[in-house]
Length: 286
Image (cartoon, rainbow, N blue to C red; front, side):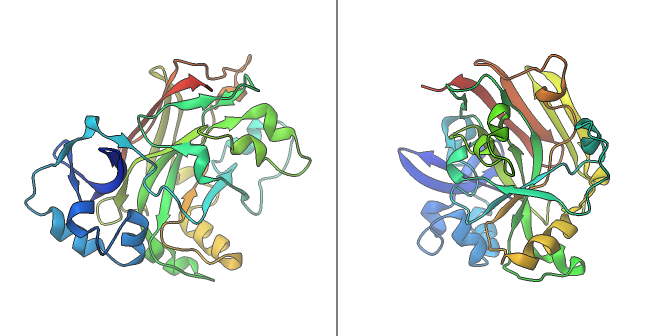
């Protein structure tokens, strides 16, 4: 299934993308599962599958305002420097990392597919980072790698928008530059693991105004999905609906000479062939 969250007629809903449209699940099973996070935590997969069986779409996809698939995850983890060539981009002659770089994003820092992402007033250095995202389906702590894939509900996509000059405001953290309101996006939907095996391999491509800027495969991850789940769950309980953005390939705008920052009107697309396309237009902060 392709499960998504959206606004329809001014109210928050969730549903399943089918046949070019969306079957509304809020009206069918919303009493028991008021949102996607609750559905995942409540083991509502089969209820959702039964609810969409034989149903015609209630909405055209283009008529909806899409939200991040899990609008309010308890945790939105982000992994840095995870593709094999990324460490070399820093030109600091450092060894490959033994452990992943890690930071978190606030839910307010991302929008859904089709919604504008914002270039902030205080910076000209808004950058794109296309990433694959794994969505946790089953809670766990100290999860061994051999059982890690059992904890994945599905996958989605992220443009992990970064405000580059604000990444360097603190000596030891990048939190400021990663958490500007509406600076990134997640979506368009979660493709469940029965249809999109997280074991992969999975491709990831980022385009700006139709030009390919990033292209890679999970076969080249330094820290693959099962390692990340085992590592994160060593110190934090992973919860249903938690999302892990698994790192971006080479080719972000900061790495060009001169840098190629996003500007209002630019169109950023993040695509993976087994998931779909996350698409956003850049707007100036109001």
